[in-house]
Amino acid sequence: MEKKNFIKIGLLAVLALVILVWGLSFLKGETLFKAENHYVAIYNKLDGLAESNPVMLSGYRIGSVEHIGFEEKDNVFKIIVKMKINNDFMIPIGTTAKIVNIDIMGTKGIEIIRPKTVNGYYGNGDTLRSAIDGGIIDQILDFVLPMKDDLAGFLTTSDSVMHALNLLLNEKNRNNLTHSLEGLSEVAARLSKNSNAIDTIMRNFDKASRMLGRNTGTIERAINDFAALGDTLSTLHLSQTLSEAQEALKKANRLLSTINEGNGTAQQILTNDTLYNNLQEATVRINRILDEFEKHPKKYINLSIFGGKEDKKKKNQ
Image (cartoon, rainbow, N blue to C red):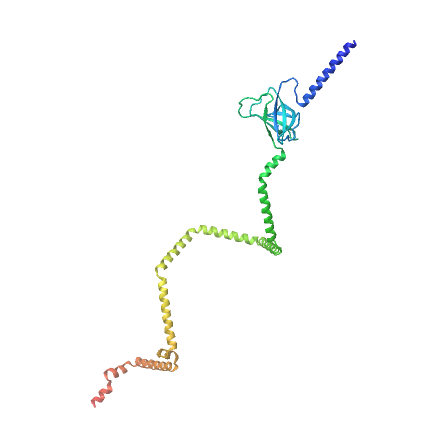
């Protein structure tokens, strides 16, 4: 009986050990009962990759990182990562083993990126191409670095603009700007107070516009008549007429100047009172003679033309 108990205890211990090993392997992503192929990838940095991290294909876990080693040759430091991948998945030649983030927490893993065309497969122990997907900081840097020069230029320009604004907005200009803003505020207040008058003006303007629209034909005829009048005036040779009138005025001016400055008859007539009085007296006498002639025309006609009755009497004696 004691011997059978020892056998049972031994079997339970072996079973527990197998379960423990299998559990640890499972936690590490290892498979105990499936055939696996081993591959190698060489990197310049791990970027947080560790042993037992998963190896993924299109988001599906097909293996894990088995071992991470280091190698230095000719002062060049290399990191050698060994992977074990389920034998069910063949790795085509040209495949890339890329270190990527597999969750939002930044857990690293290896993504198997297959080529577009398959020209054979890697064998067990072959070395795959390697690549590293940049993290969030690297992505930010990749986004920001191309804009570095533009940002530097922008900052320089901004500094120049601010310096120019400081020079422009001195105390005098600030006071002028303040007065201008106050003036604008007053103008706005006045416009607000006279809004009714402005509305009236706009309505009147609108009425005038509509009236002009209704009388477009009349206005067009008036413009045509004015154009015809202009053509008529142009045919009258106004320029020549005005020139002749100007020449006549010059001659009249010279004549008046001669009369005013000279000592001739015309000047005496205009300036001598005696001559004027004599002319007036002669005019009065002529008017009397004309009146007398009009009253007794036969008297003057007989005497002057036929000699009169008295002459006949004298001849008879």
